[in-house]
Image (cartoon, rainbow, N blue to C red; front, side, top):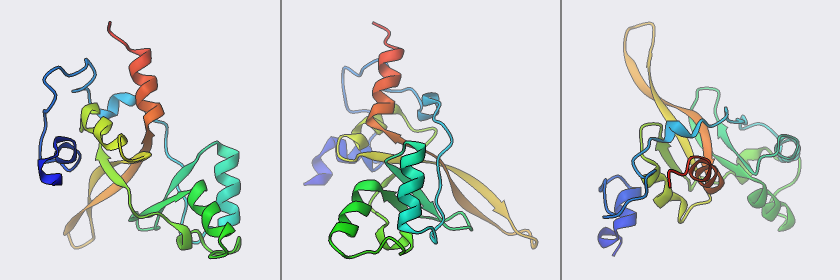
Length: 165
């Protein structure tokens, strides 16, 4: 059962510490990764344009975010290619037709240990920052802003550059 799986419990925020002998980087916060600003696509971008942008900028994936700031999903080169080759999507279709909505969010204040548990099963995690937004009437809502997309390579690069051994 996933409820007895410590890594699942950490990934979903039910446990903080599991490993007795944690590596030196385990409790360091995600914000220390110094991620670059993310590339964000709006939902109306065509699949063709999304592919061009991702290739030009050297990315494999990018968040698709509505103008309101709502994170709609992720577009990945592999998911887009699979859909195009299967004939389910045309190059002119909006990227919304191929978004991948099974992704994990992680906060800047979360630990690299939690991130490592996420990256054992997922190719990436979306780093979000919560922000309070007020309207003209004084009421507020919490919004999530995409701060970056983190991959196993980002974590590995950080650990290898800062290895304390």
